[in-house]
Length: 295
Image (cartoon, rainbow, N blue to C red; front, side):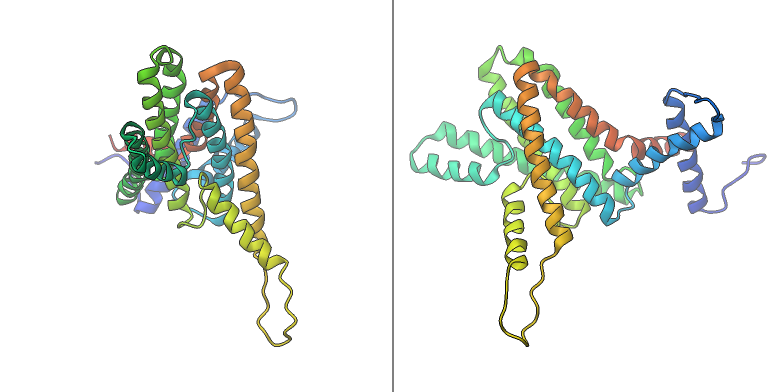
């Protein structure tokens, strides 16, 4: 189109859209002008958390961002799992236990409980599959939010659980199955996100695997060989620290989630949903700004 400056390349267009998105997000933040500082410095200060959030859940990944995101999601998963247990008396991320209970109920001819376990299994499986579909959809279209958009979906589902939970609790026959299915789907969705991001090196809801890996690294750490010419056995200390932090944050999230759910009820899920929105907001706004510029 004449009279308008056209970008020289796709890279320049992406860079321009990123700058526009950053300015749009900055406008959403109330501007505070500290004494002795001008507006330019204030905007520059706002861009630091925006840059951090973009790296945290954007499509361009690095090991530091993967670990930071994994720790936050582990805390979130622990809180949601513990709160869900208080709501329905069932842990919804524990596929090992669910599959084992299915086998037990089949052997005992308890068909209703067998079908309930099978429904939980299918929900977790569908959540993981949903993440794969959303990530690959975004990747094919070069979206900045290929990993952030599934977090938005999880946040929306968690808000539904929190807002609707109080009214549905009056109808226990519908509430318990619906809540189990929803929570299992969310756990599968979240676990698949960090699995896709880290190329199956990190998981946030699979505590059995985390504890197993911790035990392996501790075994290597304390191994002492008397053979002089044998290859050294060395523990991966950064990985051990990461695994220990994931386990600790999952536990802390569970404690906090259980306490909050006990005292304030289903509304305790709202801060968890807002945390997911915060993690995903910047890449989603980047894509929205790019789409608006094309109109």
